[in-house]
Image (cartoon, rainbow over all chains, first blue to last red; front, side, top):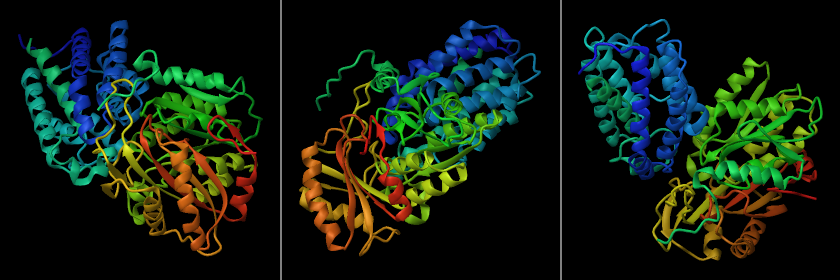
Length: 211
Length: 334
């Protein structure tokens, strides 16, 4: 059954599903990071989303923006590292932009992703092509903008595909940030681990609304 | 390759448990603050504060450099991960004595983002914060892109001088000036011969073929300038010094330096001393006088094998701060 929009309780359930998916993907994320970074991205994401799950289980969110922001705050304060700063900012900045929205729909997805891109770029200074999470986020945000008047199920499917495409494109890029940048051409052929994490997040959101 | 057995408890609790053990090693002189900071117990009012920090797993840095005439506090992250902003803020609030706080840490993307967010939170609390980034690794980027360079073992010398200055100066601006000078006068280069491992997984932090050495490789295995077959200490010494002398800071006849030879973990004192034996005549041949020699494993990456050579060029002011005694778990000086 696909959904046109999500209630607060459904948003919390969706975010819990995202956390489960990332936690289960730890070996894949660690392997991706070991190829071009220092191999700790998967463990950090696992730690961050485990903390996020605890916050989601506590519940008591007055609105959907606060649910997204709680995930970001939990990740930021439990992970540390570049990943904690970036993914914490992603959920916090994106969530903040949803203030006042009673349901999460395709327009909300577009708002969330656009604000998340802005927040992550302000913090990390990365542009498209620098082999970071931004390379998966920007195509997803652009796709969501184009589908913001349609059905949430279709919008999430399109955004997840765009993120996947951006993640694949990051394989051919030379890293400009983080430890991967010191590999130069040595990182070419491997996707950015952050772009992979973001793609898994979008796919988990898509799969939740498709159930 | 056989994994190194670790004498630990829960592999995911290493950072928290080592911090508890470190605090115990200070016997009351330092205390744990908040979720992951260590701070000196008695900081006088009106003191300009020095806060260091970074990921854990590189002991004794950075948190082991908390001490008298050293850092006032350290914000500690998980293993190899920068401390989150809330921990940076807790440490900042704990060391601030009304004169502001200098953040001094290695130039890594995660550390910069998290300390910057911590500084923004501190600003909300009306605490003034300035930042000096450590980027002494000459092999990590050319001199015209210093802001892309990593911070490695030279940090020990810079924190020593900044700590002495922080006990002496009466303004944050003055501490920034002295610390920046110490930073700009420090150059390091490393060599890796075997990887350390991530405690939680046992996986090596990088791949390096047996019998090879990564010249200029970073402390987490970041790419260096070249990978060559491992050579002898006598052959290695001139290679490392050539990289330092090829940089933009002049080291010449009559200059006085602090020489620091650091082990990355598994490399023994024996090896460091044999390299020191080879380094000293090369410095003397250039007319460089070694004012003080520091030998030890202070900037490590678990059981990573390799070493680094750091030179800090002194002037009268830096020498004054170097001469002050200091005490910490990681580095002490009479």
